[in-house]
Length: 301
Image (cartoon, rainbow, N blue to C red; front, side):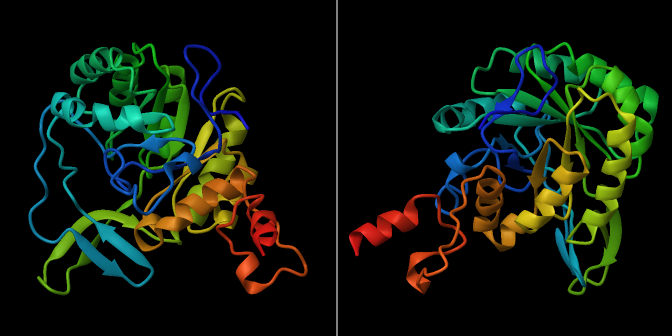
């Protein structure tokens, strides 16, 4: 299966299954290699990177919620050049495309970053992350600067400004839109006793993003792909996004609780899940089985 998840033209990003990890959920390269078969994914989206090094956030970084998590990391990374030195070899060995998530800061830094990334064969595409509370003028200036790249440019929209920014960002040069970054919120850290601000993750995010995505799919140009992201915890969740008009999906924190779920969703949407035979015994079928596995097992019996 070949699925085009960016606009036609340039060097379009084509994947075998429309499922990938969201930025910040799977590390910078193959950190989950002992838990996930990367060959079953459509692409890898890296943790956020910046031109200059960023330090981790101080204090509490994860606050449990009644129906999810609040996460505040500070987006630590050693800077783009250091990342390239550290991870290019690992990216080269991956069996799927690498999408580097670039945090949008200033147009000048965005342009410098994409000029560098255009020379890196191991990076197939760039995902530009827009900051929360960014206005239309700032967002379009960042996207125009990043759109000078020869590779496909995905743009991840902030949650609360998503509807306002979608069309201007598309017109500024985005090859695909990612909807959306996790919304921000505030919760009290039970251990430290302080209020902590961060991004909110959990199943309840999905109905909110799904509604926005469905509306914007009807308003945006048909040739502009939308990648859905938020609250995906099962193959059914992912298929709901596809039905609402998404060309692909990104899975975030579900991977932390069930690493195999990301792979299962990818194989499901890629058509790689084996159908259970009516007479299959308990040891002849399971949800993570690929097509052909059951016949092989029976042949060994």
